[in-house]
Length: 113
Image (cartoon, rainbow, N blue to C red):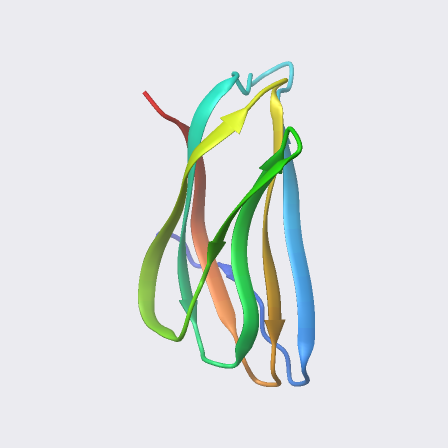
C-alpha cells in the first residue's frame, strides 16, 4: 500500500496470532470521546479458520470477519465504534494453517464527523 512495510501474519506451521494495540489519550494527542471508524487494507491467502479485525472497549467488542482469500488489497472497516474515557484496543486475530499468510497495512482510527 503506501509504505514499504506491512504487518505480516504468516508461518510454516499451523498458527494462532493476536496482534493488538491500546490506543489512548496522551499529553500530546487527545483521543476524544465519540464515534469512530476503524479501517485497514488486507491481503490474505486461504487457509484461515479465523481471521478478524476488532475494536474493544467499554465492555463492548466490534468485529470484522475477513472471509475467503483476498488476492488483491481489500479495504475493510468497522463503523460506529463508541469510545469513552479516551481509550480503546484495536487488533487482529488469526488462526491459520501452515503456509497461510495475511498482510495488513494502512490502519486508521478516525472520529466520525
